[in-house]
Length: 88
Image: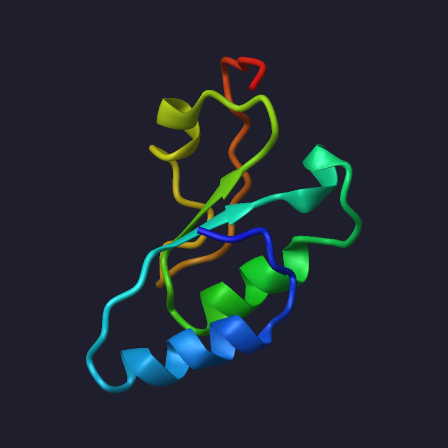
């Protein structure tokens, strides 16, 4: 679980997956918490690395956000609108 937009953590995870470690990334979009940056590059890196990922925004219903992968580890990246939002 991270809000880091530094691609080095994805590279480290990718290297570990080559050794048999399985990962699932939960990416917290920092821009929705007042941070800066673009989360798209990290999602692309995760997709290329075949690491399943979920994207969480400030106010998301966590059950809904964590039930829809944005990176399946196989197909294309897809953004899923969360039907319900709650304030955190």
